[in-house]
Image (cartoon, rainbow, N blue to C red; front, side, top):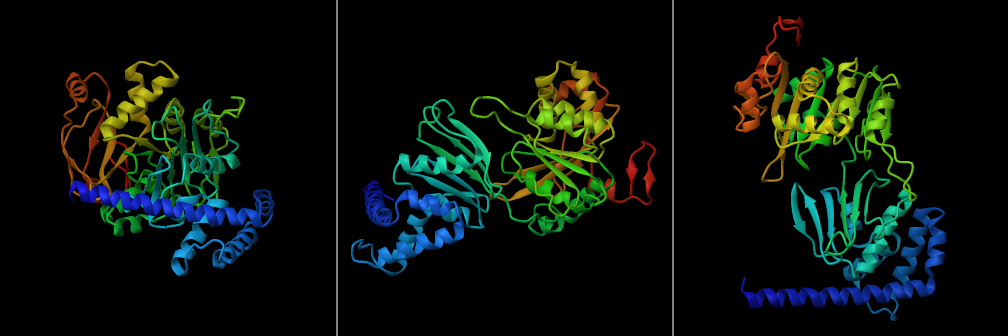
Length: 446
């Protein structure tokens, strides 16, 4: 595309946006003349469905009248829906939040809205009319959460009533203008078989993960942002025995253990407007130990709560699970060591010994270049050797796990200083057992 063509196209889009904005403002002004904002707010305090129906009826009547002159047919319906979303909902992003194929909505200032579909990020043609309009939408989102956003508190994290995770950040911390990111989560929990049909893992991995959950193996699901860690953890929840008491702990509640009859869901609480009342994940993990759980599920370990999580796994809460941000299984160990250090200063050997004793499996996911998410490796933590990526094994898609190139891991491997190791292994090693019980190393077989 030539520079002249690109400039002409951009100018045409700008004119179309300006014309749309003008017509939206005309219709909105006419609405407020008939139904002042205070009256609309009063309607919303009652039945929201009836309120929406009444406001929509007024808008359609005004749109058909000669005073607004906003066109006819599909164009008129589109503008009515946009004004309705702006007045009662979240404006330009409303339809994307209602679109099942969209998994993330990203607003970069009032002029750009990106969405993620099938793992791919695309720029939409929608935008907000001004920064003030976007700020009003952000305020509408966070007000029910008991939060506020201003120069004194320019970052807000929270969870919508739909379960979607929301992050908002405003100037001066961001130069693009107010930015809003909403991570959507599936309405239902996928089974392991459904994930296999989608190509995220294969049948051997399904059998292994089901065996690991039922054998009460402690599991850490690792991967980068958007790799599917929460999705897999939700799928694993469908394999939990129904006679066990489960406690889930999250910063923002995203897990949906809906099919299990005995789940206690705990969510961390940020400080209030006075800066008081914060309850951290670490405090919730400590409290969970007094709630008589059979298993503790931490949505994501990211701080000092890692030590309490490891201690829980080592003190009778076998079968517990968590997720970690890491680019590889070996990096998950390093991250855990670092996170334990946030809360207490312990010798490295003691921390690594705790990790090796606590975790049984590291299940690693990766987001591929085509947007798909795949389980790429399963790593077993075993005793009596150093931490390191030793012998070659295979992931669930046949990927080879070879010796790590990380010099830190190699140094530990050569020094033989510590008493544990991380060893990748073939899935067949777990799935070809001839009997149940324990092998010579004391591992559960079957």
